Length: 308
Length: 253
Image (cartoon, rainbow over all chains, first blue to last red; front, side):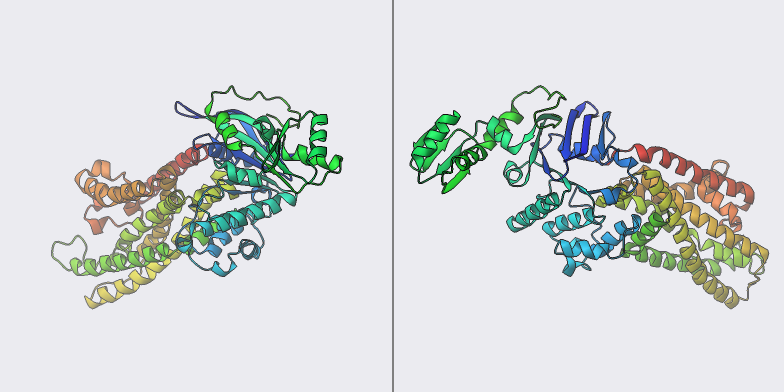
């Protein structure tokens, strides 16, 4: 996997307020990378600097090694959804997309193609002012996909979506990453990031606090697993041999290890599992990360080869 | 640039506001002509019915409201993008913002040709009918063509200045109200009350270029035609340079 997006010592202040403080990170192709943090963490400012909408005080943000403003054909390389209100309410969805397609010399059929992909083909000629928030979010995705880009940047994409909308978005984004595209999305909701992201960048107070895979974050959080097996004795022995602490409960076996670790161990020893789920309290870990004072993460290579 | 220009023209055509503004302006232009021609036959009028430049002056006077419209259309071309947040997708499509600004300026200049032609068609027809009804002179002299040509230049300049104002003042209400106060109140008061200063103002410069001094009764106070043109070009260039300097540096939050 290659690094499609690189943030290198990115810093931005608005007057006396330091919005983004020396952030270094990458997002890789074929992955969904989530920029996770509470409101005011600096996520949106970071994404807008990446997209050339806000000028950083120092540092660089690049896509494929180039600053956004230097991309020869930006719409074909990067698609972005930044806000649900970025539409003229008097314009139809089709007119909105036609304007974007015309400005970027995209094929005439591109607007209808992306409207169909986002289930909006039937509403193409309706004014955007009549759209629900969920429909506007989908229109935003349609606009982002106009140029069939390899990189997608989504700012709080599930804001205002109802549960079916969130589920649809999750599947859509996952499918895009599985096609090899790079997806960088911001969110303040850990629950949705858990379901969609491969890699997490945790931000708070303008600083990048952690850059790791979701599995590693779970492990760091002291996470556990709950296992149901018809052969708890053999599993217990395998866990003992692996040095993983465990205990029997009414619901099965509780293990102080990630579900991935337990699953791999069970497979190795050919132990049948009837159920395996994580019991990690990621929420607690997230709050601990974002609310306690932390030094900024040093820009060194982690074990995963991700600048953290 | 051609693609950006097409997109900007599409933006203008894809909302009702443009059509409504143009229609309202044509109505105002008609009202201006309709009230002006009867005024010419009054005794103290600075122009008379047998003036060979009458048609040029009457038709040219009909450009007052369209000048305001062109400025507002220019202002809206940018401020609507800020108001509705579409500026984000515009800059994502073309991150070199100077090109966006130039495309918007060119689109307003092109739109001004259409609006000026429409205005001319309506005001000329009405002017000829009204002047003839008063047994006035409807000679199409050289001055008429000079006024018409100047009208095209003035309308394009006002559209471009409007775009620059919109780029400099992203708040739509502030920009629109500011433009209306300047064009309908400040200039209209300062030009006749303080002609030494007022004749250097954009409206006075435009009036000089269009040779419309007699219709306002301060012909001798205005700049010469070439100087009026130069001043108007100067204002346009200054506004564009300022907008080109500031637009690329402004954060889009």
